[in-house]
Amino acid sequence: MEKGYITPTKEAPIFQVWNTYVGYVVTDYCSYKDWEIKTNNCHMVGETTATDLPGAMEALFSHIGMSGDMVESGFTIEMLDGATDKNGEPRRTRVFTLSTKQARKYGLLR
Image 1: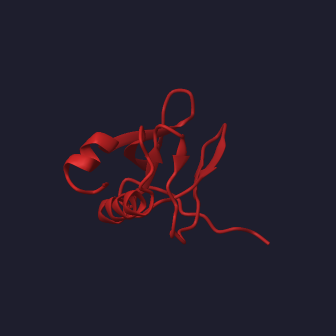
Image 2: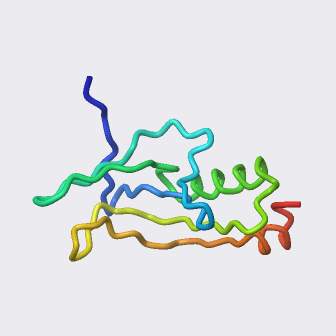
């Protein structure tokens, strides 16, 4: 059985929310397909948090609300548009960061 993938492009990028302290991609209630980037030298796949920035923000805030014990966690939202760097790795564009301290300050985490 072949798995279908989302191929990120400049017109239709994907977004990943990362817990930067523990090092995982947030996919709590996500049912998106994994992303896939193929080049001449590599075939890469990974988890997709959202297919747009508002969806990624919603996933981040929901995740923070469900997990109140994140003392030292920080979070980053990265966009992948299918481009690769000189080493053939997916080019990730950081679009948003949030620390636990900021989440508490703005009432997202108690």
